[in-house]
Image (tube, rainbow, N blue to C red):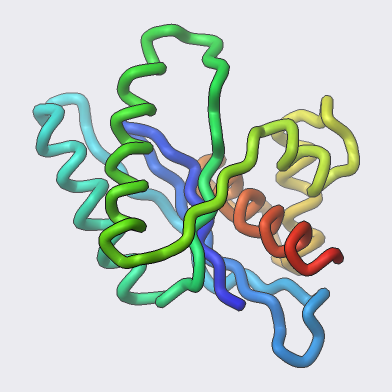
Length: 161
């Protein structure tokens, strides 16, 4: 099973592609990761269009069976609510156009699944995802590491690992 994890954002949208082995479902593997970046000098419609077109390219390249996105319902910075919501809308549209199922997890669900602790910090999650995916180093940037954690959460929970 191949899963695309997304950490949505207007400036930076992280993506991570994780698979489970057909022979050993508990063996998760990082297939790829990175970010879709936009800049503040771009007008909003162009930023959203870039997220849409880059995400479509990623979906076409990897052919995942599902898209899993962070479900953020609380924001520390009120200024980020609308831009992140707009990016989420474009991501959901991309998945719908490709007829991909979409699943969403809260940051607390991801932390609990990856580390076993709801109060784990970002570094704890990154260290654990490095172990789970048997990577040589922690994925960078943070948005990509978060996306890998989100995709891994889906596989761990759905496969009862």
